[in-house]
Image 1 (tube, rainbow, N blue to C red):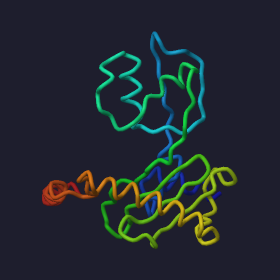
Image 2: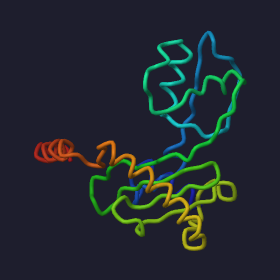
Image 3: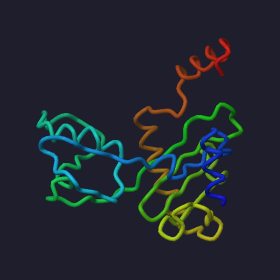
Length: 185
């Protein structure tokens, strides 16, 4: 199937566009410990940004520590609700520029991603409820959803720019050039 073929391509790092399929970005998250209830399974989407605040609360560390995420401890204990937020997703930098670098947004319903350099290039939209294996790109049929998620994505990208987080800093370019000179890239 197309899904099996894609998994093999990803396994051997031959994913042509570094598409952000769930098998590459969705990983299990486990919390174990004395004050952590056991045997609970949650299917809600959470972010790696939420790990540090959760550990901070479990360990009862200084609650004034500034973090980017939110604690999931009340959800784990069963005393709170997990309010889903759209998650920013991105691919790793490809070795060759033409292979693309993708950014996107994931919710429990849809996943949208596209080229970081051009919002109209390598556009992918998947209905995760109807197509969990992400085999049918519906971007051309669902322009209103593409526009909706593009607006959310631009908001994230603007926040990142305002925080001086560039997708490729001068330091990274220098390191990459040195690695090329040494023959590693």
